[in-house]
Length: 262
Length: 316
Image (cartoon, rainbow over all chains, first blue to last red; front, top):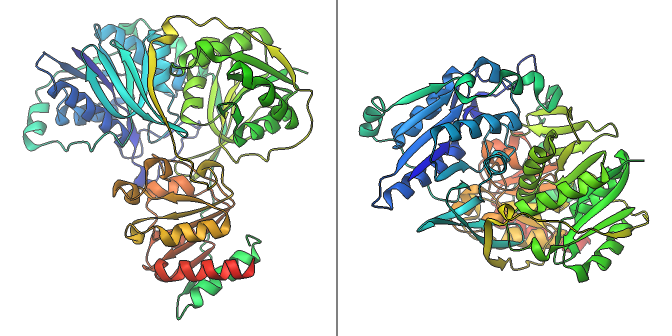
């Protein structure tokens, strides 16, 4: 069985992510890392591998600048078998639509893929649409946003916790799946894993290798454009009182009443 | 005037409030047309409700062939309506399902997509709040029919009668779209409180509750609010994940947000930072949540909240 896990290199949320002058996310000047939400996908891929006797290859796939290889390396350290990094200057500034195109072409090139596994969202763009777009592009069943994932022979079943109901969704492989942060704690790379990762293959593809024309991707052909990014003024701290002998509750209710919430 | 399609979010024909908000936004862009995918016998009643909030037209699509499958058939159905109606824009609710349908639809139609808009102008340009609410982004779809998913509470629902003309619309669903089957569905128990994503007031509890949400729920009920929880409270098993507020849970933007026993980590801030008014009660005066608040009480939530609840009841 072949599993491809899509992983994204994102700006560290605690390192003040920001925009560049062309309104794209600064992916080079801000410290980055493997998106936390993709770690859950790597974990579930490894568990699918560990849960079967058959031969399973887990490939970590990323699209991004040079440093994005770090996201693949982290996945290799966790236990993925090999990595693929699509690296091409023309990709910079791509929207989700172009990103999903590049990912889909890379998945086709990897070939014979049974499961494409993704996280529930990236922690930067956070659109949550790439797994659905991949299913659409690859013409595969979509079993997404699983809080639990279970293999039943040639099928995968996920539990999907929606707003109004909890559902179980089943698809026959090959398929595209995504998992939430409820799917189970992701493992930390062990020392052995970190050492072993250095010897694992990490291949780099350019757009030419995938048969994607540079004119189909990148900022200039994105199907939506960001016109303006503004840093939100920090909230100014308001009044803070210490509760003494019940004074806190009264002050709180006075405040709520002054704002007409009561 | 061009039509603007609004995909109706409903449970067994009962239209949910965010759809009415979308109709109000659709009115700015053109003539609102609701797309109701549901049981044929529920379409008339739903159409009457949709008309009350401004729908000029209601496309009724019998869901006999759609239900039981995840997302893909709805995207196909919407594509077929879009091809027939040539709308000026397509609006969906920014829910997990709404965004997935929008993503597939964007590829099908060759159209640009914007998700999680908190405002949409008459010219179709959108406002989004990104990086845990620390930046505001203005964007616009530049190719095809703009597909925009809008967060609940981004506009006020406006009563104002539309014609609500029902048009039965039949769709053809491919076998490929039926490849992911929903084999079980357990409806969530109604809590009797407002929906978290739609509520005007949210009272939420975190680690500081110690697992006892009695005080949080008491104040919520006195204020007519929804109850939320931090990731710490959900990870501890005190509240289900559907009540989690934060980056990986719900992102809420109510008029009033009350955080009780929540320290205010970045993960949580991402889910509530754009609330209009923020109030916190926390024992730890160093808690980062106090940097965000309009009003804060340093104290034990287990004494402050019940006293506040009693005071609210008294003044009502």
